[in-house]
Length: 117
Image (cartoon, rainbow, N blue to C red; front, side, top):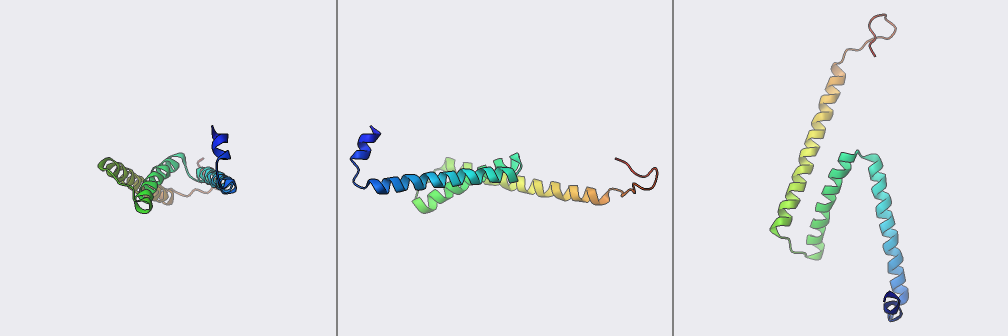
């Protein structure tokens, strides 16, 4: 059992320190995730989550020397391409929206017959 394994450990204090630091970092990760969700729209958060998975895969390859198979390369490429397409579409949408606001006629609420809700 877990208690037997803990009792057989040589350095129990190091294990407890690692346990608490792991819990702290996981709490910080969760807190940061909720704060990002408050800032982004649900679609943007989903896109960011997809990109995060690609970043984790690349970090595992670079820092841990993991082997990458063809399926992982294809999946990461699709995810990055999707993020690129979403970014382009969002930039285009915001540009079109700002042009539509600039081109809309300005009406004066003080002049009768010109104001439209």
